[in-house]
Image (tube, rainbow, N blue to C red; front, side, top):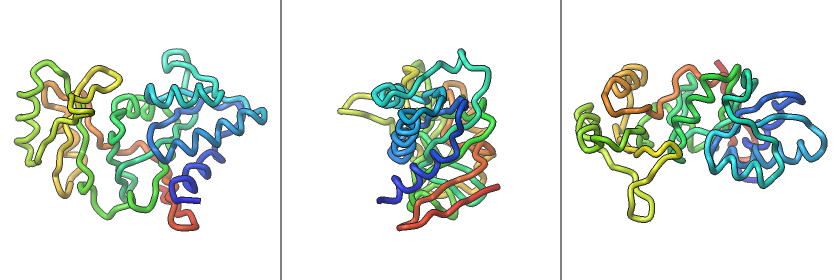
Length: 221
């Protein structure tokens, strides 16, 4: 069993009957969703809220009942991945392009568990480029404004065309090398007109489940 599968499946054990569960996006939470689907087939009653169209499709294919965020009163638990995380559970997310929906659902969740393989657990954020979601209107100006914060920027493309998020926006991948002050950077980015949201998740996760070879490491606040 690989590290992603190990972490992803373990996280599903925190799902209890009757819960409303935020279903994350990515290659590690994929295993969580498959395990939840198995539990549903065995009789567990849960309602899922998907963080992306890809996750929605995966959940539907495997028989997990879904509801929209507007149709649930609250979310008991969200399980999602991370592109990088530190010991204080500050995260970079958005490698899959779903950062805005992921952050909205995380905000409205009572608890959030992060699943990751050992390569994602780092001393300092920044090796993975920070995704920033921006509006198509005036995007070149917005990209230039982001660049002035001290990073190299790249507009994300897919099949040689600009990548569109599920919300119809663009993503700028920002290489800072090291992010010394995540909270400050988060606020400076979100103050820029044209920026919708950025992939720094600060204060959302309560626990991380990290697959490491044949064992699991837990990180908690």
